[in-house]
Image (tube, rainbow, N blue to C red; front, side, top):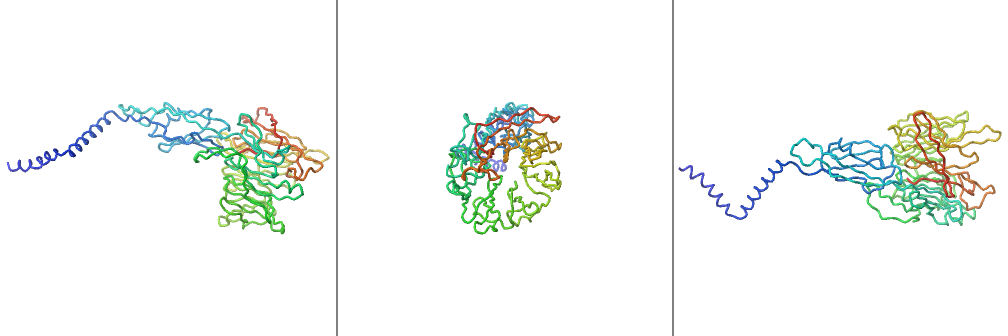
Length: 517
């Protein structure tokens, strides 16, 4: 009896506490949550899978954007996603997964000037069908949209009010027409588009000074009016075309050749002291820094910034040198075998060099980032320029080069026949695409960033020398007229044959055309 009394004491206290309002609410809430958990266990998870984020949604992609990400709110059945994902127009690619994220890597750059749609429906989550009481499982239909950049290019005008000015043409606009980017008082010598395509770096001289025989090149940037909303970047306000900004004046130095790194953050300029010609060499301008002379360089000639953005190749004495912008990052590497560097693959895995042979032929060498050298071509002519095809060949990168070459003609008077050709590096085959007139002193070739077209020019120089303020070619001759051509490119078949391709003359008078990246 005494034990029963002892047991009843706590029970009475609990019953007494239940008379308190706050305790009754707490116990009621506990009971409600317990019942709700039981119902969830009985009925299963009813949350539908869906796409939480699409990395290219409403963005404008370039050739540098090689793949997109889809992020899901639940673990997904990978095969059902891969089988039901649609991109229109199609963009071949490969799938890879990391948890709830799916990556789709393109096999080749997306063709420019196209709006793409992405659709995913009927895909299932990872646990669909494993629980008989699962009511979720089938994804909420998702529709995304993105666009590739406009097909646009820049050239130097040669006629009327366009003479010596940078001109932009956007082929993706409804009515493509030339837009002058630079003012009439500047004569443009050379230019390089920035990787985003929103600006162009160029060298120019004052027209009034040129008319008196004085060449005083300065370095500027100018906006193009193109404002791509790239993936991973904040939305920026639109900029108008033609906004000019000086990067480097002349002062005590004459500015000569320059190059822009592929990330747009480094400029290298060859400069010579006006009073002391022996004071000659490359200077560097890094983003946000003042111009400075490169410390570990001797006097040199032509140069090109490597895709690592940390070094460059420059011709020096009897060969080429690889020079680091920061001497602490590596020693100078001398390449005595080669006379020219013509280009690099985008991923910096390979470079193309030219060797001058003792039999008056020239060889094109492919050198990979491990230092392995391969002679790919030997011709009795000139190797003017080469550009890597950005498109894969059977899933392998950097296997084709578009080349501008010349063939020595067997005539009494020394002449060279220029032609455009495709060099297959895997097969070591050279396929001529277009033979050009043999009276062309300067030809410039530019491969579109998506690999679907080539731009080139055909210039006519003034035999009488022309006016002092006229634009001039690489040989120093004044350019009287120049035609621009577009050559569409087609894939070669397995037997090496090709469909007939014909160049299309563009209705613009200019020279030195370059595609916007």
